[in-house]
Length: 266
Image 1 (cartoon, rainbow, N blue to C red):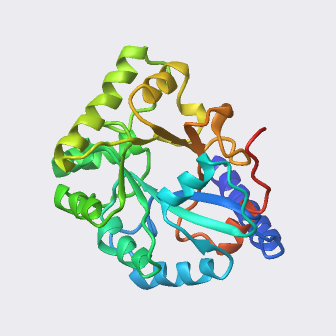
Image 2 (image 1 turned 90 degrees about the vertical axis):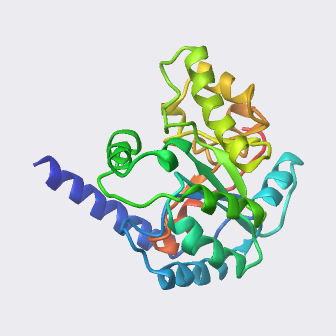
């Protein structure tokens, strides 16, 4: 019965977003999307992502992630919808497909990774996906050569904790150590500072004051999926809001979510 109810809820929500989104106009502003994959298959199609970007580009001007952050930090007001991309968890398609497609538009993205998933064995990765990412599909992760190449191409490599740990109900010290471990591994591998951090699982349901304080003491900019109508989470100008998406969503769904006006002070 629960599965039937879930399927019905999904169908109703999908239908609502598809219909309503066709009439939604994206708001003028600086939008940052965060996704994870092209689709949940092990070998996604490049053509699917190419077509997705083409459809999206009819409604938005694509900009690099760094530029979006700079504009937001400067409290910039823009007269059209600008769109930047970020991707979490470090799946292999980020280096194999997504980057090449984004570079066709001459833009750079941000990729937030968990170092554990790169160094783990195959069985550890299978367990990690189920227990830490909490999804029921398997996907390959990037290796360190992939990550280093993204960095060399000018894309941002950010910290996503060492092991995709929800930073809630932990002591400050435990949160700090989990974040620091991921940051140190990334900096050692890239021989470069890691200034950006994105919370695992995105929203504020998965971190608390200890987690937020620890992150802000280790990173210059922090990203969450909570409260997208405000550029800044909880009025903290070092914590920016992103909007979750996946590349297999209809563009009408994204237009619906990005149609609301974004504000600097809420």
